[in-house]
Length: 461
Image (cartoon, rainbow, N blue to C red; front, side, top):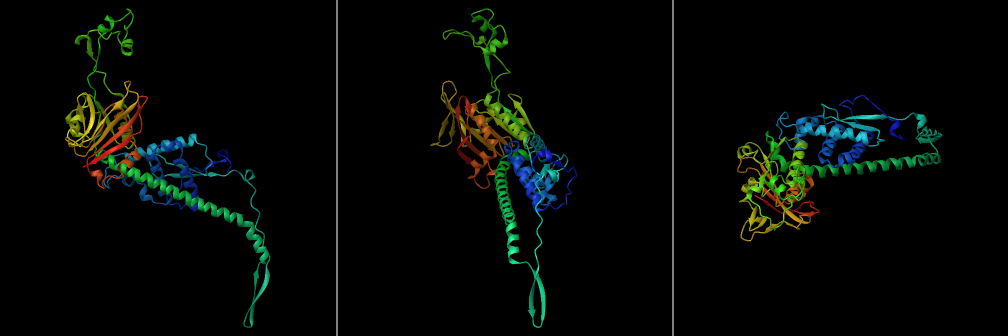
């Protein structure tokens, strides 16, 4: 088959009971491998795992494994009796896979003889097969096998004899030699198939291992029927009053508009004196950039895994709210709930003099300080991920906080990556998922942006 322009696709739907031969299975698995390694699917481990799961069970005719509840148990570690109506994780993921499949076939040149589709309302994929181009456009057919000459060969048994037709040895060798390249080619295809299946198996195993740790970590939040509260702090912010801007303006027209006052500094000198009335509180201001980045990242993550979330800011959530829903608390020194809930833990955020840091409890406890240059552009920051199964609120609480906002942003990146979690928890106790945990992270800061998280210490209790 030379190009997709020579292909048309069967519109009939394969029966669920259809038995696929080895060539058909090989074609489907090759197409699956191309899809999973495409840019459309490469960055979504969950979509890769979902599509691989349903395709393999479809090929093996495992219809019982293609039901919503079974997929939820196998892929998303839900308990066997979970309510699919309240927990749409499978439906949400199937929708994302459908969207990515459509995008793949719209943007990727494809000469495959098979197309994989997943229609709405089913978790059983369909395989549509391409019609080949007309014979006149294809390579010439192979020459017919020449008939072998038969010569009588006498076999005697007692007084009886029979004649058996057998081909001459030279003719047999010529016939075998003619098809020897084809036999070698088939052998090579077989080896390639085995290698491809082994690669797919290894990829699925790694994805399943990562996904297992990822699901274990997040399972307390996912098991609740309530949405996860994503709680950001909004500290008090004061800015110069309009009168101060105008009083110290060098020209009358300067600082007349709100935009000028927000984007420029007042013309003040180091010795100019101010009174408290010169400062005005701005209730709408105060969110840290790293905190907002973390909230968006974690909200998107929860949506991808089928969990609802609600973002709360400043005074828009109370202790009573935290008692009724699982929560992700973002930020450290700007969030009173973080400071209260971590004050007596193994790692805690503390102030020592004019320094804000993370301190390890105990007489010989270690200390970690955020270090950045005067322009806050280069240096390093530290963060804590604190996972409390049964906090003071009686609910699951996840605290995502850095000494500065760089660390908070990096901690959210760490939590949304199955690879990071897998690496961090590979040496954790076997039953870590049923315990509380703190993970201390370090991140470099370059040009005002945090880098990749590095695990410094882990404490499980």
